[in-house]
Length: 397
Image 1 (cartoon, rainbow, N blue to C red):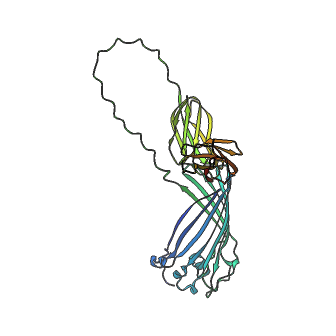
Image 2: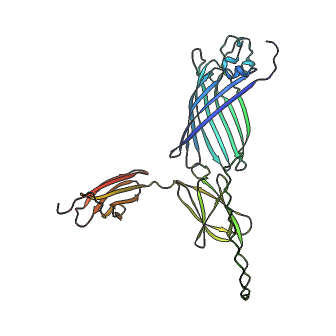
């Protein structure tokens, strides 16, 4: 087909987003476009394959992640093929163009082992449309791999793909379909260049003005020289035990001699304090919707002490709120008893009260001298809030 420069362009773009939906589930989606290899940039840009996929992940307490996706590919890559009836089999395979759209499906799993993660996936691009080949001749593959973290920012990966498809009969008049290699290996290196904003510098405080000179008093007796206590640094790494994700929004502090001192945020999962007296100190770490982590740690001389904190979800909780009033609309300071649990509180002068309780069914009794006792039932769900409005009737009425 004439002279060929031997160069092509091949460009792929991908945008992805998602978020947590509770109980270890995460939902998201991505939108991608691949512009196939061609000697002309214009031909590549006018013949894209556009993918849209829905994604889900379920993270278990053991650290195992199950994932899957489903989507659709709108494929126009045949636009770069030209006279495809003159292509050899090798040219068709290398071009990777297709005359058919595809339904995209896949499931996979991630299993943590020590400092590594093992990966497995089965996926397929099921070709659809008039004249499309059968399911077994569509691109189907099984993938196995591993990811090993070297530092907080660097990791290496190795992945192998095995084709599960049967080979179609390809002749000069056959339609263009993607034919993947029977076996391929991918090795990669990943590095994160940015680990979050640097901590803000401490404000500069101007020195106080010099006092006016006064007559010096007689020199006091020299105090005995006391050596300062030995110090060391403490570094804490905070992660979510369920997902393994770093918790940059956590708060860490130590309690020494009855005084609380905060740790400074350093990177995406690390907090640090420079000078800690050698001995036993109490370390406290808090994060939203997670159970407070509190331990006694022993600080010794020598290398900085490093502590890894794995936080777990807090127990589910609920709340019963209420407003107690007389029939004249004025608030009443009444006695509130909640069973089971023997919760006893008194409402404020305006009649309001709040009681934190676990999820369950409760009986709420409201009593006040000179008024008839009221009994109500309340069902509190997970992280639920029940609001009760109680109108008290005087005994004479």
